Length: 412
Ligand code: SF4
Image (tube, rainbow, N blue to C red; front, side, top):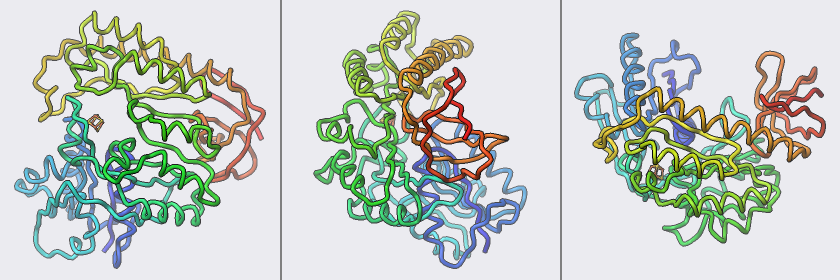
């Protein structure tokens, strides 16, 4: 059979999809959806909008007469409903993904949601159409942020086996992936249940021969602990960290049931910035409770953060969460204006950072679009490169480049 995988959502889902592809025995993966006999949807359920995207996609594929399997976070939150409505042939929870061959042989419709406590084995050895590889190091989250459904569909935090992660990393490096991205639902909680820490795991990964760079998914401020600080000078660690704040008003952080504290976070960010790190964060604008006073406090604090990257988005309701029952005070237009303000502050910071840190850039070239190759440097800044040579998938050191507000540019 020909199988097409459709992946929605985050890097964890990208990893899970590669895991399923690596597990396939007798079937072929196709890159063109129209050629597929079966479509496996690895879904996302993070907002009501994400649910609609998945549902629309299912409707579209069903109209084309494809056999549809649903997995991922949406299988847990919406699987039963979609199954009862006969929208999908089979539903399986992510903990069951290693059984994909058995599911593909099923003659009758099925639903197997599995559990939210199991750990994966690390078996992915390659990534199609990627220059870097993702490694899942943990699953689930023990935090209970009021707007977030993820712990309910991914379960509590549990760490993957350390030897499995190291072996998977070694195999990926052997197969030509010199840049690894560690991913998971809440990667900073790695090791809490296995008596180790993310810092210790990173030390072991950094010792792998041939590994050039490790990038990290999102961390929480409280997870930058002593053992993590010990690896901050390592040459294989990217000079960029993404630390999720979600907001910079203390009042709002309490409403959101966040564990971070605005003023303490400012200290941490400044400490890391002085060590030469570019710093990114997530920020939710327009969550219930974001009154004018709360927003003013947030902006005043926000300006004190040396942020160079931001993933800001307007709050979107997720049924089944605490926040879904709270009253939204901010209209859409105001929320967008607030979002833009934050983005503008960070764009300017980023420009200043790039001018201040005019170093040799170590770039993994990922793709060519139009006349430019693009890749990311150690600070997670994108660079556009003009060249007659074929640079795709190559590591290059760039000492001579132009810093412009829109980005860095080089010709080699
Ligand atoms: S840290 Fe908060 S936002 Fe992130 S997955 Fe856990 S509960 Fe959700």
